[in-house]
Length: 183
Image (cartoon, rainbow, N blue to C red; front, side):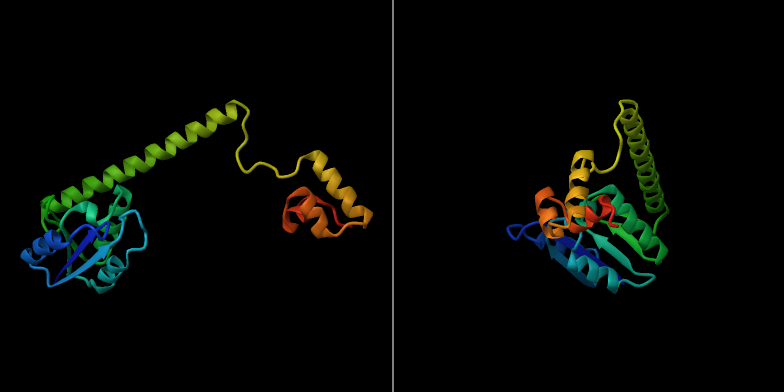
């Protein structure tokens, strides 16, 4: 069974072109979203994915209708492959039921892996450069040594409530308890 998926970003746009192309391609059922592709929650895409079974083919008018990023497309393609679902993109003429389509799919996979590796290496190089400049990673401390001493003194005096100490220092109860030594 061929299942179509169409998407437009706004209500001002029209789905007719995509629907016509998907019907002409032989799609028996078409799911359509009117939502930005940047949104992770696309209800009709989720419904289409739930509807697909092994041996089915999901058909889109263009690749960017299915996903906005290469990594998202690769994740979906990998999911389709695992579940025995074929994929067709009409505009790009990609069809994973053919050997040429499988080749394109594997090239996309290799590019995505290459992209992830580049990002990982750039991140590591950036962190190493920051460390070399004396910068530490992680969140900055909310309380410096002077404020910790003040918090401890206020707590130890017993004259102030935890709420008052927190409001004075501008921290939550959990943060205050992390810094003071209750004893």
